[in-house]
Every structure is written in C-alpha cells, then in structure tokens.
Image (cartoon, rainbow, N blue to C red; front, side, top):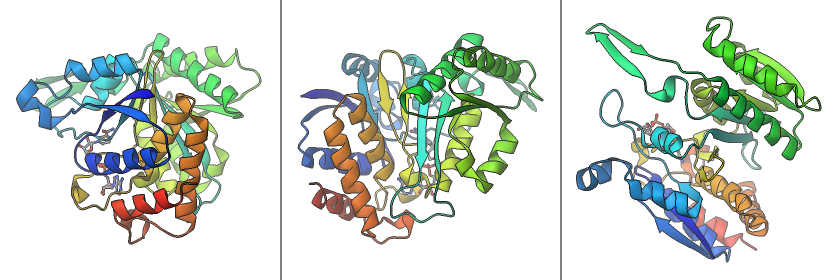
Length: 331
Ligand code: NAI
C-alpha cells in the first residue's frame, strides 16, 4: 500500500481530486491518501495558507498529488504553489504536452516537453515598492540552479528517448541574467553530445509554437517563460483541462495540473479532471506502478476516443459523468 499526500486544493480542486481518487480506486490500486488542506480556507484557523503539516506530510511520503490552490492577485498571501516548490526544493517543473486521442485541435503532431526552472527568476518574490509610482521585481538567476535544471532536461531527454534539448531565453536583452542561463546550458550541454542542442529567444519560440509546434522536443526555460509558454502549449493540445505537470526534486515530487483553480466554474460539476488524472498517471509511473498507470491512461484515451468529453472540450458531460465513463472503460 502506498502512502501519498493529497492536497485537494480549492475552486475546482475538490471536484477533480474526488474524481481522480475514485478512478484510481476503481482501477484496483490501493492508496492510503493523506489528505492535507492548504490555501485561503486554512488561514483563519492556522494562520498560514501553507501549514508545516503539509510540508511534513510530503517529506514523509515523498510523493504528493496536488489540485490547484487560488492565489490572490496583487495583494494577500504569497502563492502556496511557489512556496511549496521552494520549500521542498522541487526545482524541475515538467510539463509534457502531447496530442490526446479523440481531441481534435489545429495540430495533430504536438509532442513536446517543457522543463521549467521552479525556484528562482522573477518568481523568487523579491519585490519592493520604491515610491508610490515605482515598484521593482528582482530577477534572480544563478549558475547553480540553471545548470541543475539544464542537466535535468538533458537527463530527461536521455531517459525518455528524446533527441533535442532547446534552451529558451531572452539573452539578447537580459544579457547578464538570461545570459548566465544560456551559458549554464552550454556548459551542461557539453556532457550530452548525443542529444541535439538548440537555442531560441522566447518571443520567436512563441511564434514558432503556434505555427509549427511539431518542430520542438524538450524545451528548458527559466521560471517565468516556462510558466507562460506552458499555457500556450496547453492551448495547442486542447486547453488547460488536459495539460498535466509535475514538480520534481531530489527528495520528493508533487504532481499537479498546469491549470489553476478555475473560480469561474467552481462548484458546477463542469471541470475537466483529465489534467489532474494525467498528472496522477505520471505519479503512478514515478512510484513504479506501471500497469495501473497504463490501465488508467488506456481507459481515459478510450473514453475520449468514444467522443465523451467535458464542456471545455465542446462535450456535454459533467465532471462526474465523465469520471464514470472512464471507470466503465477500466479493464
Ligand atoms: P485557471 O487555469 O484557473 O483558469 C483559466 C481558464 O481555464 C478558466 O476559464 C477556467 O475555467 C479554465 N479551466 C482551467 N482548468 C480547467 C479544467 N480542469 N476544466 C475546465 N476548464 C478549466 O487560471 P486563472 O483563472 O488565471 O487562475 C485562477 C486561480 O488559480 C488564481 O488564483 C491562480 O493564482 C491560481 N492558479 C493556481 C495554480 C496551481 O495551483 N498550481 C496554477 C495556476 C493558477
């Protein structure tokens, strides 16, 4: 029996995590879920959106499945997601982005992986108000974190039979910070002559991704570009409802979808659980439960191929109806 931390989040989080837990249970795999709440709802009782008990649970279990948590915009507490990734040193954010069966999009051969640095850059949270009309956010790029993420990307490419790792930056403008990221990439790349190397500026990448996404394989990016390009890439394969992700460190891993808490559809039984389910499938592979991972993925793909879809994909099924179709297809 596996012990796994479950952060069921807020907004659509509880609805989609409930579906995913039920699908995994129906597959026959026994998991002891250690359910940990976080976010705005726990502040009043515990004084923080990310209580130490959540971190302790993940450290103990080494693996977590996480639904989205809301972050207030412009004021209020610091993002639970950013804090979690920093506190547990989950330095690699891995977001595979591949066309799914049964989901028709403008492209049919997208198969790329975004490897996003997860601990620094403009997300380090170093900001100051200079005066009423001026604010500064500091972009922090270090050689240590840049080399670590680039090495992770090359190792990922090797393990997953990928052929190219492309470094994304804006080093023509941010010559020092993005320049250091690129220099780190070049240093690490020397150790991987068998993997093709490429460099691209982030603006050019965005243009090329919406014209010829099939040209890209593994992309390695600093934090902010990685965040933005992930959403763009999600759009190429059917939207945020299907885009999976994982935050990986040396000691533990937290699997979570790319999307947020979708407050606009909260509590309406409308959310697509696919992104969280695919994140859970990767989590099962991480804990080496390959046959259950394959079984659940097969059931999901069969369901989509049969034309069953949630509202975001132009279908008519509710979250729970879609969940039940997947469960019916588990064989
Ligand atoms: P969002 O990803 O929550 O929603 C953007 C759009 O996509 C909305 O129209 C939403 O309805 C739709 N959408 C997202 N997931 C969906 C799903 N599974 N099924 C169907 N439709 C879906 O982004 P937004 O609105 O910018 O952020 C809302 C909140 O989520 C914010 O507080 C943000 O900080 C937080 N957030 C949390 C993340 C996390 O916990 N890892 C990641 C991204 C955002």
